[in-house]
Image (cartoon, rainbow, N blue to C red):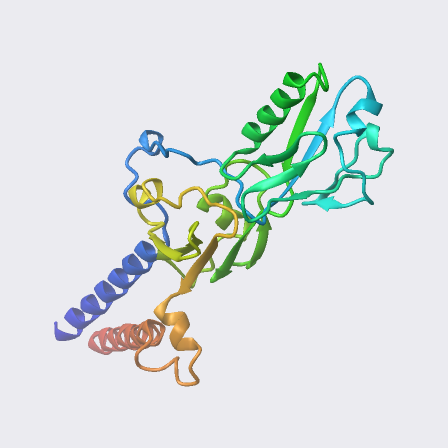
Length: 277
């Protein structure tokens, strides 16, 4: 009877250990109805800041007129594609760098303040100025990000810097682009570091196991130069030590319990066979 009780206790320990590991790695554990989770942020779109680079392409029915408002340059790459246009003879376009005051120097229009604007707002403003000053009657203005990036480091499969190619990039998009967290990444402790307009670094923590934590986070949508850091689990941290895989690691004790369980099972089988004789 005592042996059977020990056997049951060991099995319960293994079950609880498995449940504990499950809760450490599964996302959105509190999501009863995922469809009811709504993201409501005041300004999720990426907005331009000083030192950002922006590509602005003006097109119209008369390529020669449009050329007056574009900056010809040798072919450049923006993200994964080359910016080319029919009215630039396949030359590509130079990007504007936003100065410390938030301005760019646009051909014919002079200085334009674009800090705090989104892509669509910049395009609408330039188009309005071109029409309002009777420079072009039918302009099409295309605005693209040129150097906007964020970083993902820590316990992810592919850490690195990634381009922002659209107006809204969420922290889940970032994790997906980085190949998801490794099994050793802490889902409950994902940190986002963001530099504010005063140059101060702000830190935010997101718990990926809670959908409420994710959807209510001020860093659900990332901005340029954000850094996402996934901290390692305690097990991973211990493994970095030469003596990490010892008595303090769960894997060690699970291995011990498995071995003990196997021994007890074998012993019970031998005792049962001996009683037959």
